[in-house]
Structure formats: C-alpha cells, structure tokens
Amino acid sequence: MYDLQLPEGSWRDWDVTSCSDGELRLAAGTDLSRDHGLELVFQEAVYVACPSLFHTPVFRPPTAFEYELVRQSVGREVPVVVAFDIADAERGKLPCLIGAERVEVRQGTVFRYHRTDLKPGERLADWLRAA
Image (tube, rainbow, N blue to C red; front, side, top):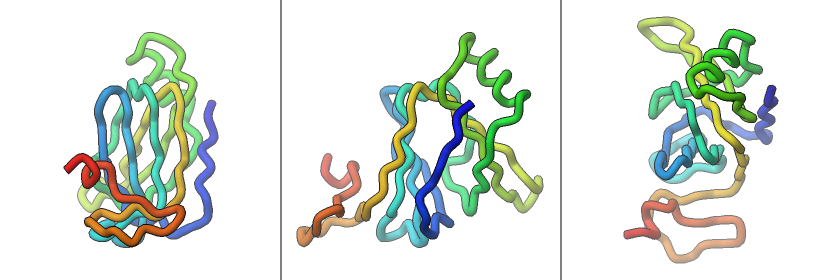
C-alpha cells in the first residue's frame, strides 16, 4: 500500500491540469483561477476514477476492496494506489481512486496566466509555455 503525504498548506480546490502519455497531473490551491501551489504527478497512471474538478478531498489509505479493484482492473499489482473522498451535493461522499507506477509531490507557485517576473520556485503552467 502507498501512503500519500501532502505538505502543509491550504489545498482546498483541485483540478486535473493534464492527462496524457500516461501522466496524470492534479493541481491544488486556494484559488485556481490565478495559480496553484501543489501538484501530484502520477507517472504511468493506469487507473483513474475521479472528477476533473473537486474540492477539499480527504486522502486516506485505500481499502482492501479498492486496492483489489485496481489490481483486477489493471491485471497486475500497482505500486501506487491513492484513495480520497470528496463531498458531492447529490450523492454524499464520493470515493476516488488513482493507480499508477509512481507519484511525485511538487510544491511551488505555478501561475496560470502569462507573466515574466518569475522568482525562484515559481513557474508558468505547462499549457502557457506551449503557447
């Protein structure tokens, strides 16, 4: 089992900023309209069950059932299985799962708009650099 440890911070709002070539990137912050300060980068993501935008997730160890669900869906053991719950207005608590080969926790300010006066530890979002 994998135990995800997040750094201290206000990680209220979350969204999927990219999902391509086996990489899933989740970003978190307090106001995603301008920037985010945390990224979870899942390499070789093989199982993803979460919405593209969510708020205030509660990360927890996956249950034995969830771990087995990912293993059976993928057909093999997966080194990283991350589980979290989010509140859904219509359905109550919604469990979410991500299975991947690796996950990297990145912290630092990522601006979601063009700017040139970047300080150490700051960068532009990937979709801005590609433009």
